[in-house]
Length: 339
Ligand code: UGA
Image (cartoon, rainbow, N blue to C red):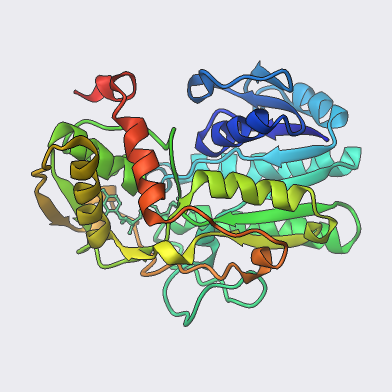
């Protein structure tokens, strides 16, 4: 199959290409504005195009016309950006994605759309979150953090409506906190509201700076090894049953509070490096850390039975998930810029 991966240079895209090229699966054309994370990843079945798809719609149209499946990964995915630049978020994550979906319809191409676990929204649910039954609960419009999740939700609903009308074949996935090599970016000690939590805590381990626990750190997340996520992609892309369906990609076994994640990463870091971390854990309000307009999800537990029914299973446990991600960041070439 010939895949066009839009946004290939990010965390998910670069790991997906690595996974597929190592296995010689599919012919891949990838496009992005940066290939930093693709360094060292190559294969006869992979071509990288350095271009900004938002500024080159004709190129996007041409590339889409030439592939079999479009994999759409373009998005800002950090809460700090939703709070500080909500209009940029909706412009890229909603309007640009709609444009890609429309091009897929024009050329009759299947769309593999990355959405987010954040569409489930705030607490108020019981049990694990199911793709086809759980309500999607957004906070008030004055809390602009939700512009991202509501944009993704609307995107899903529009793609689904086109699917109902027979305009498009699609698969939508909702990632649950993927973690691994090439994740986000590291930051200087004491930076507030930068990347996502793993990158903040990892930066603290390297610099010796504090680990910030937003609003006490009792909120919970479950984390998914990026290679399990890539394996989920191959399960779905190869299975006709996945057409016009939505899937969670998550690992319920890794569920943890953010406070426990901080101490877990400290103990794992000590095991791996032999150096005892002495990071201070500091509680901080969401508003102070991210800015006004932040709200959080208390818990984000995935129901993965729908994807398991297709034969996929997350096989990397919490220890493997975080040790692979930590070890990658111990490379001086990766972390030199923050010291
Ligand atoms: C983000 C995106 O908004 C989601 O769309 C995406 O699906 C998700 O990441 C993901 O990676 O799958 P979130 O889980 O809130 O959502 O991302 P993080 O920034 O990693 O935050 C996780 C939790 O840690 C939040 O409660 C946050 O307040 C907290 N946090 C973050 C800290 O306590 N300290 C930090 O230094 C950073």
